Amino acid sequence: MKIIVTGGGGFLGSRVIQLLLDRKDAGASPVDFDAIVSLDLAPCPVADDRVSSVTGSIDDAALLNELVTDDTVGIFHLAAVLSGGSEEDFDLAMNVNVDGTRALLEAARRVKGPVRFVFTSSLAVFGGTMPAVVPESHGTQPESTYGTVKSIGELLVNEYSRKGFIDGRVCRLPTISVRPGKPNSAASSFASGIIREPMNGVASTCPVPLDTVMWLSSPQAAVANLVHAFELDGASLGDWRVLNIPGLSVTVAQMLDALTQVGGSAARELVSLSHDPKIDAIVGSWPGNFDVTRTKALGFAADNDFVQIVQQYHDDFIAG
Image 1: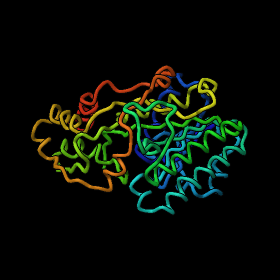
Image 2: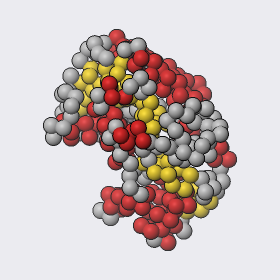
Image 3: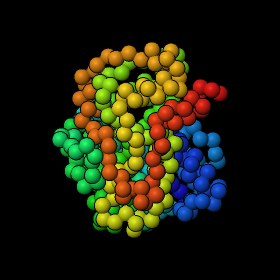
Image 4: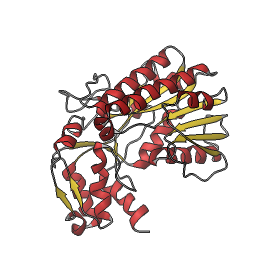
């Protein structure tokens, strides 16, 4: 029995794979599996005999039909063209994020199941006039291509679940900070860059106003919540399978204060303000706080504070 992880060669996907294996080894996983297949444009970095890498794109329907077979017990669909890339290349965003998602759902529909299907969505599905705290019932109104394709994906996963084709779970993830490694094409990439780069002695720019409110999660909490969504009994989710994953509501100014507290004033001085209207327009349309009463009741967890997140990054990637 196998689990398929699209985007398994990436930052989140590889960590999801490792946690799945760790929980399997500890006897903590309620889902029986003995293999994980990573589908990505790059190989999965997890070194384990149970993990195999397939290089390819999720818009290759023939490849998906080969991979998703009757022994598939779960799918994590993490692969996507990110927010900045989607805004720059509309056709690519549609081909990968919409057509690829539909092709993967169709592949899952054809096998014995219903297969547990975790789809990562985004705060970018929101826009327009929003309350200070967004309730779970608030309608989506995306103001970017990425938000639009993710909103379409949410509805597709929910509809395929309603029809009994899959056992879907849609996770609207907070912006993840602090990501190690290099910047990516996400409009929110700066949320890690303004911490990561100065902590490594490299200058960084902040493209949005300091009073911008961000809904944030550490990588550790995001990965744990994705695996928790997978392991939940689908019956506990009800008919609406979209979940607002818990996060922290933090202003950019508070993020930089946390940088100063952990990294010192020298690190803070490496961050300069350089307004980018394109990034501000995208990120500024996202909500900064959510009502997560339902998801917390389902066992999802949030970080305690952003200083702790920055300290964790320091301990894991700087102090060593």
